[in-house]
Length: 242
Image (cartoon, rainbow, N blue to C red; front, side):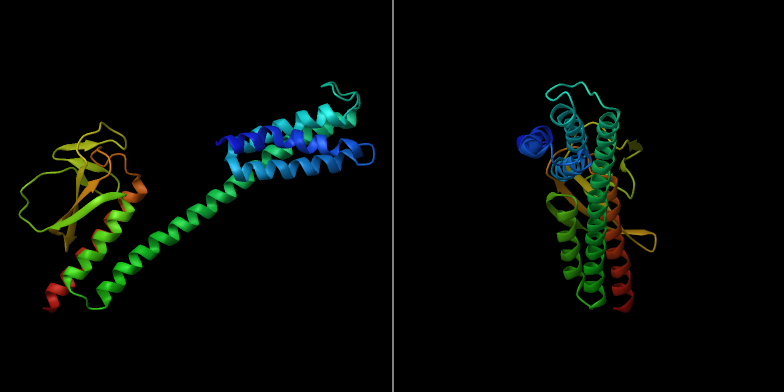
């Protein structure tokens, strides 16, 4: 978390509680707890799950310290205040978690829309009767973006060099299956293009950092393979029609 997020999570509930001191005899404890829950929500939005949890704990302590008798002490004399403090902590933790999950769901939905749009753009070029060169260029541009690569080129067989091969859910070396996270090596990887079950070419991708592609998230590898599959299917159709 950033320093500003830490400040909001740790000091936000304290600052709000201090601001409410002049009216604490006129405001109900339940209303104070609701105000502090709002602070927890803001902290969760700004700092994620950890920030929400920290703000929930800070809110419970601030409520105990400033709004339960005896004031300015962590002791609580009334049973109702004990229950309110505990509920504030529990509700704050739950609300913070819900906020984080909501943001994660939105991010996942946005990512899915971007993935669909990438495939749609490639399909649109293929369906528009563009030349194979234009289609390859479109896929190259998408792959550079998806894989955060420096550059990408397309090669037709026969291939002169051997590189780690990106697949839908793995990274392969000749005769070797690399785990999802493995030792770092070359920053050049190959993405094969198949049409009707036979290899018709490959993309050679230069990654920003070495790692044989093992550091690329599985979802990104799968999307890159799907884009290559689009090219494979389209080139087969182009070859058949020509």
